[in-house]
Length: 514
Figure 1 (cartoon, rainbow, N blue to C red):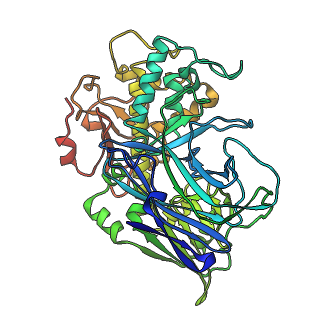
Figure 2: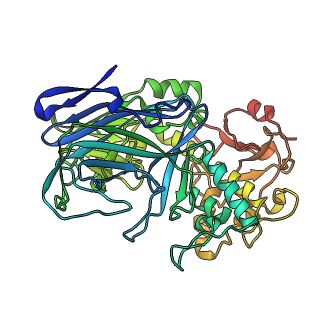
Figure 3: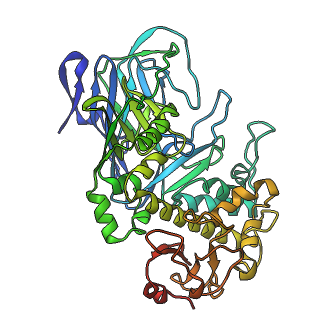
């Protein structure tokens, strides 16, 4: 079997044996695999398409990038001075100072396949997240391409929690990099409290996890590795001084946006998010692929989002795409893709990243905004569930508590759960935002606790649920409200961490309350 590598610069097609483009682990059973599906090079750009398959028999957690929204890779000429190394790994030494805060790992369920791509402007300029081999020299050529992606097998968040718990019971000293850094693994994570606090930055705790950089104190990252030989890729260490600008939409009188695969997958990519939608909503968004925007205020909002983007790293993981076409009257003046609601690829293959999601897209796309508020409300309840789990394990000092596993006293649950972060007046607003339903514009808390739910209660018993504004509210179904969302409904959190969206009184009564 052979794989086609397209080398457009030579106007020819080179056929390489499959053994030249496969993972080191391909000869092992039950391991994830990465396969290059296409490598295209012309006089301006390099584009690498690849497929990751998880047939390992368990979930894996793949490094997507550095920080909450980043999806970048290191790119540089390796020490052999012939291999262009693309590296998306976190368990590597950091040698040039600076601050790599965290790596974002995304779960890939057993049996799943995902397609990604990387595109580079030629000649390739180095990008270093962790280490610099910069030589300040002129143009050279790479004859080999290597790509590495870091991943963990199994349940990564639970693995971290177990390690922290064991480390806090029996601290294991690690060789310090200098006197400033922590000397235990738990210290790098900030204990269970610090780890949970970091991950409250995420929208989907079931599918993503942030791991702080630990100078390799936290180990176990594996590597997906693939190489291609017999290439001719221009590369220079000279600084790229180009300053491209993001696309300018201000002259547009009409904008067409085509979502791929659909609006459903673009805005709500995770299964847990889709569970909050009704069958009719899922069908509507799954069949919805294109919108036309003609309202000047809507076009202005989208133009502002794009204008404020910053020059981005080289990797664009193409999971979902919004293809934007701009018209002035009947003439096309501009077109570009938005990937994963964060990245824009502009003319010349330059990338720009939005530090936040494209809020304008959710506002101008029909039906999306209200559903998005519902999904964010469910995310708040998931964060609170993690705080409930944390409350059972930590004292005010942050160490493990030798006591029965308990939930907080219902009449003080808001204060008790907030107390694990040792909240001050300055930080109160930040740590209290998880108590507020995004669909309601007033009040300090929109959730109540079911006092009948205990740690050892059935997994499907209601733990928290939506209610009208209040603090430390507790009680039964009589407090539930349908008024925080449009269409009417409210979220409930079950004892096992599942979040459901309830639309009718009949559904409320069918839940387990005692």
